[in-house]
Image 1 (tube, one colour):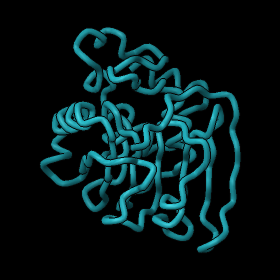
Image 2 (image 1 turned 45 degrees about the vertical axis):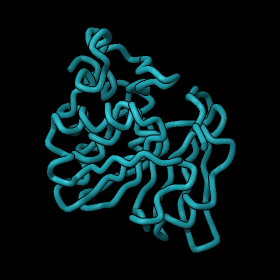
Image 3 (image 1 turned 180 degrees about the vertical axis):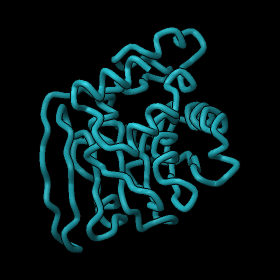
Length: 204
């Protein structure tokens, strides 16, 4: 819990619903066995296959930008360990849904198994799919929000198309985090927050 308190104190966690999710969804439940004792560290940790579980500070920052709400349908691209998917699953509640996309089959299974500790899979609150994240997920579109945990070179068109008007995309591009807000079918507003490091988005 010390980690969550630290993130609140430093101003990274502000919204009550997001703070509540951070307290309830334990990072330790999403780590490989040999790294469980490092759960309270505020840094990214390896989960195999060249991927990481993101630094808590970065996850907090991105979720605050995303502004997830109860009842929303959210696409989580590059779900990895499933931690962000579970945090979002907790926030959207029983009327909401999180579609978690992971291109590495072993990690898709790892994330799914981790989420089932919270009954999110059984309840249909979080659904894991093994596909190329750069194409989004047409079948469940449109989405209220899209969260991306791997860095792209630019924002792929399918993401833009699959987002509702008024919706938000939070994604790393190079070493910045970008917030895109969809103003109309063609128009997006963007804000850049520089100075972050992410693993690259794997495309098939």
